[in-house]
Image 1 (tube, helix red, strand yellow):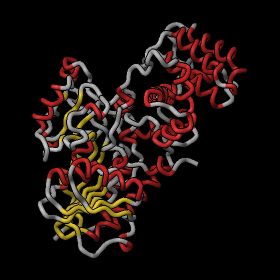
Image 2: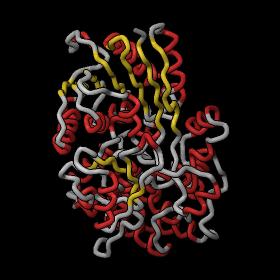
Image 3: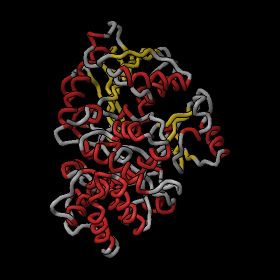
Image 4: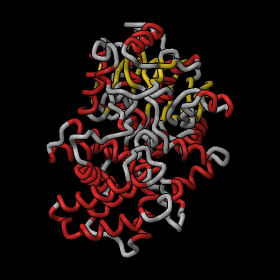
Length: 474
């Protein structure tokens, strides 16, 4: 059974997560730690994901069991991101090299990790002989795999003998695009002109984007503070992203000036549209219906003095909202409750604004969380869409006439975006569609400014989000 958390994760689940950004790591191999140890650690994580656990769950559990220090945890995370981004190709290669399959699963996952490190397009670069040697060493060091040393050596050497570590002869959809076939087909149908670019973006390491708390410091002043620390941050040329800074290189939050003092948060650019779109006015009553971990809650309060109720059904995750607000010097009422059942918690006073950051497939953030693509199933999408419908219909009566409800998902699937918004308007005669971005597609600009300018490509990094804004008729 797949973990419930992995099924229900939505855009609210990660947009404010402080990160050391494994996706920014290009070399997880400190000289004092042998690669075989990281191969084994990564193999545990890849096995957990293939068994249905999210990486966010599997990593701390494996680290606790193994007593990993911060360096080993970071290296295992960086390796697992690389493997998950190339898992379709690696599976096809392994199946070609060993058509009868590989057992036990741990051996399979050690070999998958080693094969990814030999691919020419992986960002983690090691000499081929080192990868082969350390893959064999990983088998040697694990009692359950010692019998497979010779097999692993022969298989890895067969692959390195290929010219330029060629891809598998049978290029399946999964092997070619490193996404499940159903996912690729869904994007082909929904985005006939953009699907290839979207899948290519999912293979790139996303930038680290910040949101400056302008109650403490201006964006220009924070850019200067970054520069003093040797960090380069660019402000997107988009009016709606007036607090955003995109770093040229991701860093641990401990290196961000004033992070503990509440000067800045980590939040993707696409997630930063929400607060401005909701257009909260001073003193208004606001409901953040699925608030954890609190990034959008905090953003609303950074922009305006208002009365916010931050709701989340998970009391443990709600603690993260409170921690975030405390760090930023902000205040909101918090309540652990199910937004789809207002009779259990609503006091009868209507809200002026409602933010519904709904549980979704998280398909728009798969570039940042590459385990998502392997955890989702096609059947999840209609199930999640039904949950979103129930939430919208439950919350709409709680809105004042003239009030606004902002529906958000970090999905690129139309069932969770455009189709959901159209169906809502059809069901509610008193709902008026208001201007909103609609579907934002994931994008990552080329690091070369000249290439960027010549191609007319995106000027800033962002995840895939959907926004629909509804105003209730007076």
